[in-house]
Length: 133
Image (cartoon, rainbow, N blue to C red; front, top):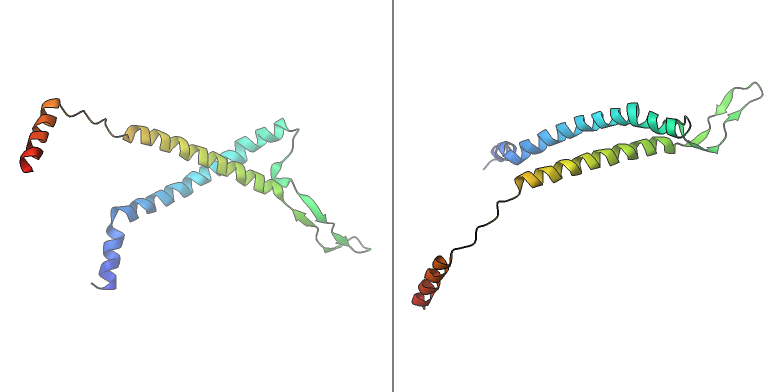
């Protein structure tokens, strides 16, 4: 079997197509959640914390170097942890949404309970097994 025909077989499997669709939908869902966090959640958190913009939170590791004229020679070195906090909130919301979706999906997809085998069938199986011996 040639490499191209193997690739065609691989790509035509349902799992690969399902995975591709999942990646595309996941990327779009990530953008939606990022928009939700940036536009709604973080302003409300900022309001609750006294107007703090989380995207601007940073620790200055080294001040900017300026010359006598006031021109910046080297920029300040900042540790921007606000953007990290915002991304962490994005992740937590996405993880929670996926958890809720999978929980509902597994509940719908749960296998039907197996009915108990009637006693007469069990008796017939015992007779069959003893006759085989």
